[in-house]
Image: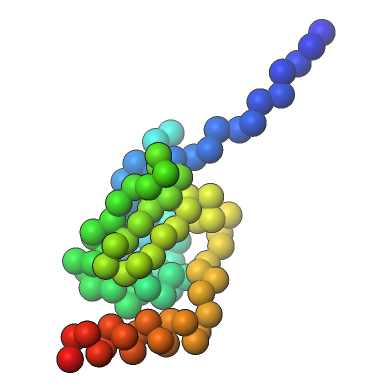
Length: 102
């Protein structure tokens, strides 16, 4: 008897919602995944309008927020990985945002 080994299907995003406390991604297979927004500083510091302007990228493998210059993969959210952006980088980004709005 032979068995075919197949790679598991990559979970793909269908829709996204972001509140002041949570990022929730609805997957094409019917599951929902939720993570605390504090894991993603750019989302945390974004306005509701910026958070709600997202795009599905790479056929559903990721999500992009244009105004926040943030990209997250569905796989990283499923694995429970928070942002790996350094505090120094976030500080610089926040300073640039403040300068643009002044």
